[in-house]
Amino acid sequence: MLSRFFILIFLTSCSLFKGSEKLSGHDLLKNLQSIKVEGEGKGRLHIHERQYLFGVESLLKENNDWIMGVSIPLHGEELLIFPDLMQEKMDNDEIDSFELRIDAGIKENLKGTSLRGKSFLEALRKTLRFLLASKLKLPVVCRMEEYKQICNLGEDEFIVLFAEKEIRMTYEFAGHQLVTTASNLTGPIFKNTQFRVASPGNKRELLTLELFWQ
Image (tube, rainbow, N blue to C red; front, side, top):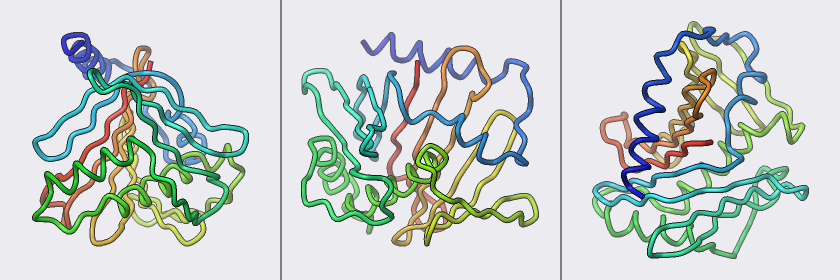
């Protein structure tokens, strides 16, 4: 299992250097649609020194619920569900199994920080709404400032940067940054979506959720 997973990471890294068309920041919504948050693949959750590897399958249902199922060796299947992404704010009292794992991992491994599982998951939900805005038919308003685009979806603001074969989005929340990096968008093998939580001032990486799509 582990050997196959790391082969997957190696192939993903190699494909980043294959020649392909440079991404253009002029068609933001089209580029955002290229970022995968649905499908099947492999995943990795890294919280400080604790790491989980898993299989992943996710989809956006007709009722606009985004569901991600993960299969962790020796632990079984767990779920993360964000109900009704059409709504900007959603009160959900139900706690899913993968959500519990993330929250427990933060409490256990990041005791010296102010990061909380609830605030991270809220930021992740907002980021997914932004990435799926075109599919959800939600209005996104962007303006160009120097080398970056500032985009708003309702009250939420995202800073979007374009590089060759990579898009990076930053969302500020609860004194932290959720940095979403989508790479290998034009490669022929795998697509990679990474959600990384950085401490204030981007001085320390606290949590990474990385998805390798088939």
